[in-house]
Length: 394
Image (cartoon, one colour):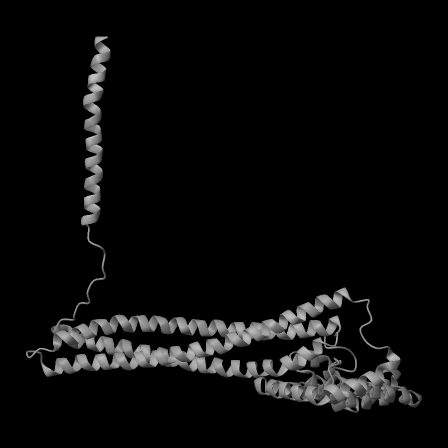
């Protein structure tokens, strides 16, 4: 009994003491936390007047490097802007024609080609966007550095405006401040130019992705209706073509002409590359003809090949048909049609040398049908092949 009373007394004495200690500790910590001052940014420190000449020269050198970087970023942005402008012009010119083409239930092969072309547009715009973003980040870093430098030298200028400050030192500080302001204006101008370019490029990307979505929907619909007739019977093709010609001829040709002009402006050396390939092939064929002529005198197989080698330029144009899908992969349909005609005529010259005369009517009929198909593709919304021997699909 006595021990239990003793324990009760101990608990009554010790428990209040423990509670008081806990409360006092928490109160002390709260007071310390409230007493600690909030963290603030340190005030800018003025440069001592004795160190102004050396620091001023260092600051001017740094500003010169910044001006060079800003100028380089501006030049790079202008070059990207030229590329994006040409690409955007071609995109805008092709949107109308390709959107009209999607309304004609094109084949899966045509949709594949359209998707490939528009994905290429999307990738090129994305690359340009990343380059512009890199230049924009560089200008932001330059502006942050200029802010810090300007704060330091403005403080130095205020402290230097004293009667005892030598005029040379004050002029040195003022020249640094003026150089900072000049560099800052150039950087802000470059930043505004970059933001405008990024906005224009973002709009072009949105148009490209909208067109890609339309092509993908048309592709899904084409797969779902692959066994459903979506055009008039072949015996009514003349009437349908005439109606479509009257309805879309001028509009389709105008849009394709604009797209072709934009493509030529963006890739001006494409035709020179094609011409160079033809010249190389023709030179090789001319060399082969000189080497084969004497050994072919007693061999019938080589004798049959000589008529082809006798027209090396026409044969070179004919063989360049294989390169058309590679060289003109992103070209509009009008350029594909022109290249098809340009390569078809030499191909007819070559074929007339190796075919029998009684096959000429069939060859002429094939040529006429091909020309009709090309006209249908150029002046209406109907897709056409890129060459007389196959489609443009790789």
